[in-house]
Length: 413
Image (cartoon, rainbow, N blue to C red; front, side, top):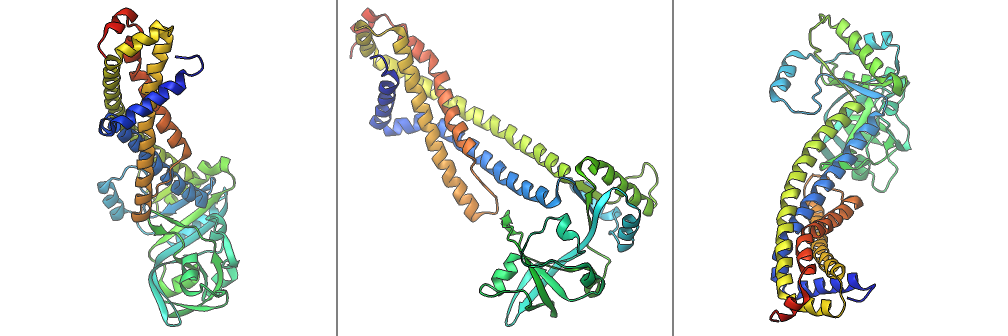
């Protein structure tokens, strides 16, 4: 082979081999294609979920946490869930006031309650909207951004006024071509004046994060009572004191509920660290499973490529003898077959990327599963497939490079 042209020539030979026998080429690269598709699909699901977790953590903040009647982060245990439903009482307004008056390590402490509601405007209506009764500081605690108007105020909460802060889905449904601020909508038949609109947050797992209406929590209690569905939201004084703040709230709530030392909490608490840790654990399991599946496909694909390359060595023995007789070194022959096997394998990786992209588009558009292909996944997929071809091409390449030129020239063409 001419100096400076080994890669180009070997790549050209590999491409010609693929074109000359398309069915054999497809079967040869099937394992690599499946491995690359699986790898990128799994990385895309993880990436999509990462975006979801990032949204949840950003809503909570690095220094925020939640108190709920029940909280199961990480491994799902139906037995434990049923036990919590049995023994965990609902959170109450009295508990909120008790904690708020005694806590020292929080800069914000808010309360919310939620339920489904039907929303009407003129002759149009929609059901299944999330109605949230909230304290005025929940906008700060949960990082709610305002697109128009303003959020609810403490005065409106204390006076139990019928005012509402709506999500972007409600705006699009009823006020696509108008300013909703100042308009009146009806929640379960009761009039509420819109004072603000939230910025769009998008959807996750097919569930919109913009299909909601917020009203003052005291107004909510006036309409529906204060016995069910209450949760507490909190921000520690700073990130460094998050764990101490959570411990303080835990101690105060246990004290209010008169739980004895050693007795389990009958409420749930979680912060951003809990969500991230649970997600890391889950993605670790997914990644481990994916590595096992991908490894099997890659090994199978690599073995097939090695066999094809061994067959190519046998078919081209005479050609190898000619190359050596005109000055090609063992290194030239070795590099030729290594490049050829790598190009073959990387081609399978490229096809795998294409298949994974099609799968991601279909899944993202027709299922609630979020998929986002990270550029790194494409690079890793193609690079790994090329490395597999390189590794499994070593033996055929070495065998070709060590052929005796005289014996090779005697081989039948």
